[in-house]
Length: 168
Image (tube, rainbow, N blue to C red; front, side, top):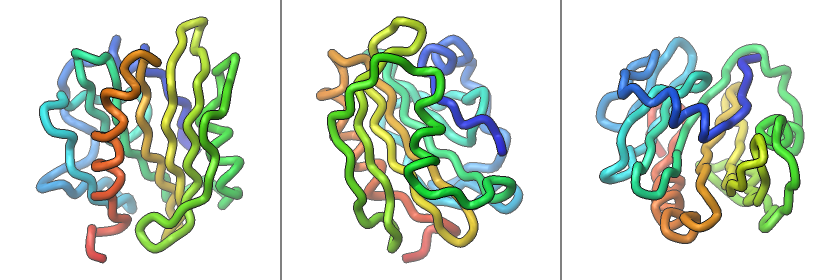
């Protein structure tokens, strides 16, 4: 399985504005077996994450929103394990929200966690779901002081997510 660890510091450092490795057009991302629909956050800059499919950053808040699909090699673990995979490498975790919610017709794990990456405080807002043989990770990584400013944009982003080709 691809390494799914998040690090906003890595993404910001790697921000070169390059295109994603798959094809993203009119809100639909396609790369091999991976297909999903998300609308880019308004006024956020596309970046190429070092591991994953799509990401955008807000230079003002230094926050990153990303979407990733893994359709092969994930061995179908429970959602809780998939969320824990996203927290690898973090310390001083404080869970602010932990729930199972419906997303795109399936159960999804949603966690909001205050934590540190290499001693830097961050907030991870994570949604993980499995659908049609794929695992989808939708994430917001923000400095704690910026989280309240960007959380609504992330909610809008999540509301537009569709697995597969985007049809409901």
